[in-house]
Image (tube, rainbow, N blue to C red):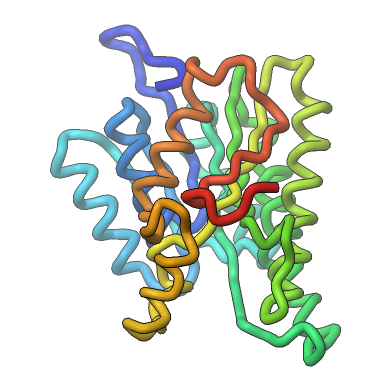
Length: 251
């Protein structure tokens, strides 16, 4: 873990947006096991998030789920005054996002605005809301995508939002580095989350054959990487884009 607390002291706090499903849920469980109390956000459905919280609490750790639409400045503002903010945020994981498959040539300006609002502006909004509550040596991981670098013919708006997110995060890393804070970017490839839920068995096999390691990544693969990026083992890494894709894409 990044900054373990001495025995008897309060545990550090990790805030994870989009923490009820997929990569966010796996990261919540992993960071709780690493020694963090976890504050996770969800948007549309409370049940998966509450299940994550229950699992963490059953292990003797602590977690709390709160409803936050990261595209809604009012809800983000409420997150910024949540009682847990008074404890200080040691780790911030910006993981929320939306992906609607739209062919690049058919993308409308409304498609682009909506996706940018959620994926990019929403992340910046959360950062601004909790910035004052970050601890001195806070660590931040922004979940981008390989598509933010390589693009996609059926997700141009998503690719653009993730590219903007990664570039902003790298800029932020340079700005807050002198304060002792670190910011890194995770760029997953194929991961077994809701995005791939509609795969046919044939499509899934096709994906696996494309990957040199011959499998689709798991949310746990991503959570392990995030755990590393917020730990002292990565204390000299900031502003990096870490591609975790089984060798599928090598920029």
